[in-house]
Image (cartoon, rainbow, N blue to C red; front, side):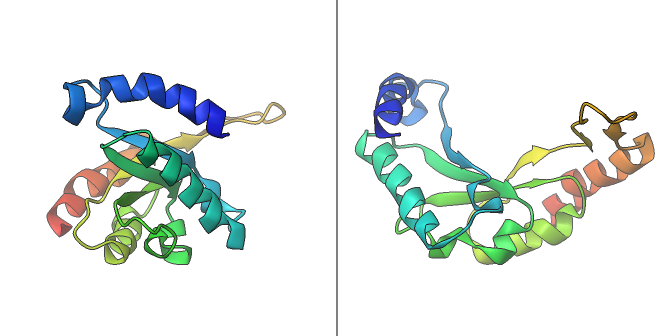
Length: 152
């Protein structure tokens, strides 16, 4: 894992906004790691990734992308030794509820939706697409854009 990150960060770090005026403003270190396999070694692993990234000279915002209910079950403020990591949410319903919990667990940080999906992937054997109706999508995206904005 470390050799991969070391090589990737050599490229990424050249394009940091705060360092070189580049387009990189944040970096996601893990995707949904804590979603289903959270155990005591998770903290060690996530801090290992954070150390690799910070030791490389990366100065921008670092975030984790987790399912909406992860903020409630496993707030990252207790995971990372460095309080600079932003916890974000992947969701498709109940944005106000989930982002309220996220905000409660990390006061002073922005509410960030890293994934919003108006449907779901289809398995090979299924006969239909998993997607919202236009009305449901309109309701959910309106909550996300307008109610959450006013809440914070």
